[in-house]
Image (cartoon, rainbow, N blue to C red):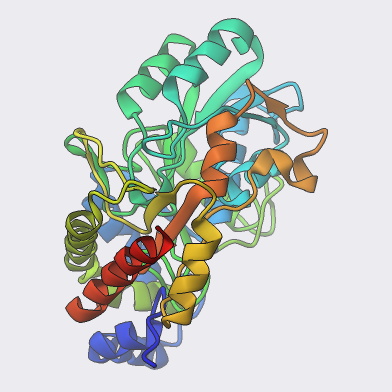
Length: 384
């Protein structure tokens, strides 16, 4: 039986093998493994792509969030870290790194419910929290989940009216847009991940901070190398979080395929949308009129408690699927006693019980996309 995986990195490598091997050979020739020329080149290319002044390569998407927050604490408060009294509003329906970064920067995460149509932070609920309890809030971290943009107009309007910073978590959405702007170019900083499964992924961990703020850029550069411009006389509590030269070289080789692959992801999503429309027991992803969704994940909702049965059915057909995410952050042990919760988070709870992500990798064969859609249709016919 043929197996259809969520992601086939070997197939992706074979597609761009020549470019990657040339890039690696250049590194073997120059032997500049720490902060080599490829790092600066990648920073420049991503900055130009996003339309920002500065990009700073770091060791992971998680570090991008932590370092951005640390830079803002130093800039805004003149202190190394935020305090527990400083609140940062975000979504509980995301990977743990988003909330964990807030804790590591010294602040307290405030979890606000999601918009059920997009799975992203509910901008109206965030505004409500700020209106009622916002005196301690320092900033907002919207997460562009699955490649879908948050409602940035409303979020930025709310943040500006309350004098708050916005850091965009763009780990899953490189290449996505809100109106005419690339995601990650709108807030005080945008944070990206180059984890192998991402729309632009390396052969290991890697991340990037994007900003138009010279002070945030300067502080971020210091924080990624132990906290100073001079490593023998540092100014801040820093990290060893440089983007590896070899990873930068591989990412440069793969970067030329980013828009092509994002376009293919959107094409696959259209096939799913056309094939699966009309099935009453699933809800298809809804692309917002002002956004360009880049489908890091194609995520449906399976109603009436049938998600696990559908997942098992697909597995028996050799088709992989994944649940992102089965447990909201507010329910994780690490956040107990360390977060605040606004409202009952009912939409978050419901999403965690219903979401199912289907294969959407850009090199997925047409016949495999058709087979996945047909299997889902067969399940619901059989289940009636």
